[in-house]
Amino acid sequence: MQDLIEQAAKKLATAKRVVISTGAGVSRESGVPTFRDALEGLWAKYNPQDLANPHAFQANPQLVWDFYWMRRELVEKTKPNPAHYGIAELQQLLPNVLLVTQNVDNHHHNAGSAEVVTLHGNLFAYKCSENCQGSPTSIDLENMDWDRDNDNRARPPLCPYCQKGFTRPDVVWFGEMLPADNLQRAKTAARQCDVMLVVGTSGMVYPAAYLPIDAGGAGAFLIEVNPNPSELTRGMDIYLGAPAGEVMPKLVEAVRKLLNA
Image 1 (cartoon, one colour):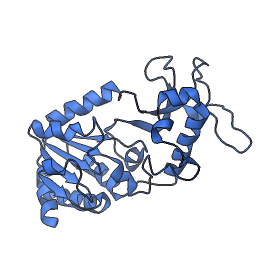
Image 2 (tube, rainbow, N blue to C red):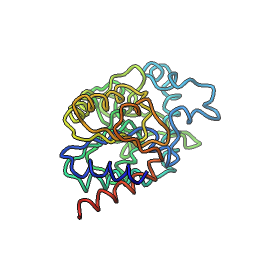
Image 3 (cartoon, one colour):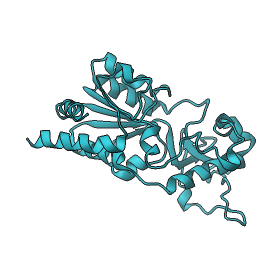
């Protein structure tokens, strides 16, 4: 494994442009439940698609809001792990590194990553469900005076701008398109990078899974970090088969040694 880490480090240390693509596996190591893992207890009777689509929110905004508020509370009990910090360190060490993530938990930002494209949104960001001021109409929930019931359960507040649409999480739901600007930025970076580092993804969520394919097709060197082979592993130039929290600190250290040599 160490030989492969050193080979990967050499590619990263000499690259002019790097894209890091991350998925749920990175945050799972922090204890963040995956979307389906969160459907436990009272939520076990629900299908994920019944709770994460605009039609469900329109039909029962309180139900969908409660589910996402529960997810937010679960994430707030976790913190970034060594993989998140290692990725942030790579961004500091190397000249041009763009991070593209499918995760909505904000841990990459909390770990210090600056250049982050959030393909699926942010669980801690909110917008008007009607996008009354443009798409998206962002809402600062933390500074709003909004109602809670007697047991302190949050209620979805009305948009402060239009007072018609409810406030909703700024995440991508089933049946919705990814933010066009973010997706285009990710695609362009993938086609222009020298190295793509794919960390903790299943390779089954599209269009994010196309990014390594696009990068490889344009000549990029592909490195994967995953404890188990994914749908993308066959196309990788280097596969580092271990948890990201174990691999990333070693990879960062190897890159640092090369840069300081």
